[in-house]
Image 1 (cartoon, rainbow, N blue to C red):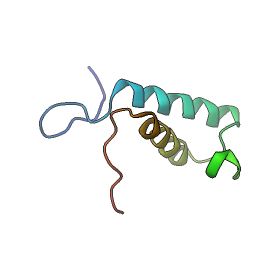
Image 2 (image 1 turned 135 degrees about the vertical axis):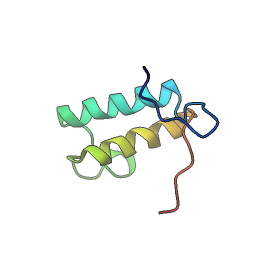
Image 3 (image 1 turned 60 degrees about the vertical axis):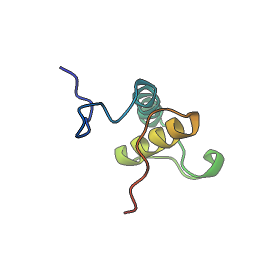
Length: 72
């Protein structure tokens, strides 16, 4: 059984490429090489949520299937 988020239409919200991008970011966060900020010039990322956000952002830039950011 897949644990992808599904929209009301039954289709997954996130594409495979987006999942891979987040997975990659999570590995980099664990290894201690993931950095925040423009061009990775910010501080070291220690938060799991921040790592996921960076992974999704990178996926968006590559053109992967990711829903638009919510205006929170």
